[in-house]
Each structure stands twice: as structure tokens, then as C-alpha cells.
Image (cartoon, rainbow, N blue to C red; front, side):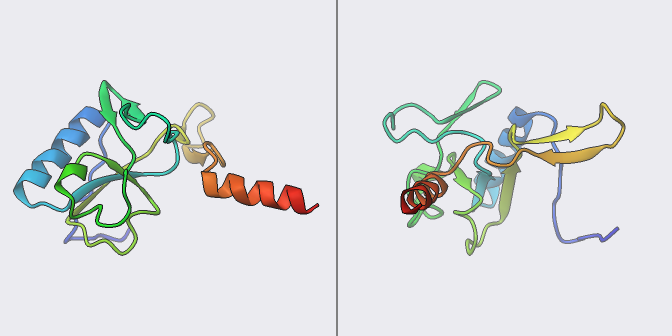
Length: 134
């Protein structure tokens, strides 16, 4: 097993505990953000309603791409895994949504990923374009 002595790697069973830990790190060191895969729908038609509900916590997907990290109003938004590359974070809090689960009932103890759990709009546009070309 490879060890990363300079990293703070933790697994949380409770989203609430993880979220509070991230908020504390944001207060003390800054540049801490949530990120996740496309496990929750993004609804552009209702920007006043949070996209994500986890354990009584309401969170929006990142509502801007340019300057998202430096904007103080976005500290509690969740960035997609595609928003974070190239950003210099002190803490990246990765939220595994319902598209990933740990399979224990058959004793395989594998992490399972449900592909295309939520199809991203770019993927849908690409698929529609391919369908129209046929």
C-alpha cells in the first residue's frame, strides 16, 4: 500500500460530518471545495432551488465556471469533477453519490459504478447529434 504522508485523507460515513469538516478547513486555511460526479441533476430552470439534497443539507452545483474558486459566494457549492482540474485547492472534498456503491452482499466487496447515472447535457447533445446524422 502506498502512503501519502503529506495528505489528509479521510473517509466519512456521514455527509454532515464531512461537510462540517470542510467548512472548518475553509475557515482556517481556505481554498476548500466540494466536488462530485454527475450523480444529481442540475436544473437551470429553477436557479433559486438547490440541486442537491444530502442528509438535510441543500447544495447547488457550481453556478459559474470562470472564477469559481476565488468567488466567496461559491464556497458551499459543489463543483463537478470536470470543474476542478487545474485548480489549486488546499482540500478537495469528494462526494460519492448514488452512482457509486460498495457491494458487500455477495462478499465481493467491490466498488460499483452505475454508468450514465445522470447523463450530462453535453453527452445528450452529442448523442442527439449522432442520432440525427444516421
